[in-house]
Image 1: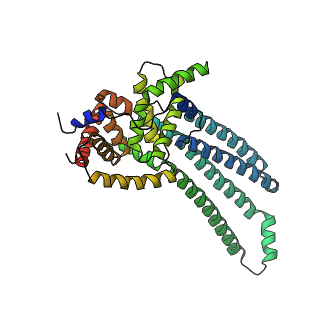
Image 2: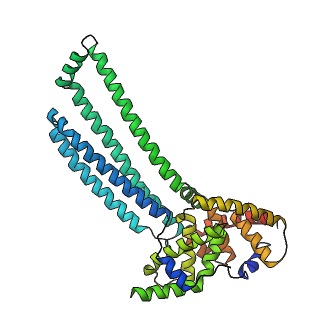
Image 3: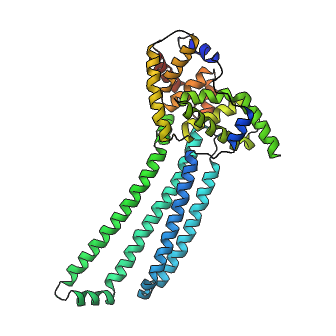
Length: 208
Length: 164
């Protein structure tokens, strides 16, 4: 018997906790709302789904003008693909979320939580990529349209056309990068705070 | 039907609440946090209860859900963390005035456990409750070999913390 084993007797003979709940107290508790990490993950993910769907609607409204540039087919195909992908993501998110059970093994529970988060992570990554790609295509069409070049020539007749275009492209790229940067930083912060402890525990559990 | 299930659950849990109190005491350091974690574990147990098939003992199943909630699902609020830090400091003072009475020994043991990591706490609790390596491995979802390695490390750490 090691010295540590002696503590087993103390442990087993410990008095019942000073806090004692009746079955009535327990019954009241089961009707309270959970404040677990999974609940937070679910709400944040729902907000993310809504946010990107709203963004796609907002951009859709502004694209009416762009359609006149000959992008109608491109935008229609992109929209259909986009909605199919969003529905697929929501399906997988819901499936993963439903799989989370507190009675799984500790490792499986952690993996299921992280899997759910990963689905949302890929969803965000997909949306950011689409946003950048969409903007790049639209800006290309704007900058190469006769309408835009004519306007540039009338508003700045003395300046070098290629120089003005370069500046316009650089400004656009910087704006896109800043927007993407802010989005990713915000995303990392939220999940960083929420899942830091869980990820650390998961790594410790797997370590030999 | 739901009422029957609810009654059976609350009665079973009332009898087995000591398991949850042990987990709460190991993972929290204030009464508020203890009650908060107890409530969260109860909610998680109730949610998983319809899938409880009875092939495991209710106490074993409760232990698993309680540990899982403490390790992976419980989110400490800022208010509770602030209180627990103060209480931890108070415990430290109590620990220095070591006495051999039973309650003091239990307090010292909990104080040492609280200084372990979340995973080590789980290993420690399962060990003190005399669970086999097979059961520990099954609860945590790791191999028996890994459970043994981790347990040896945890025991050494606990020994150091308890000064034995």
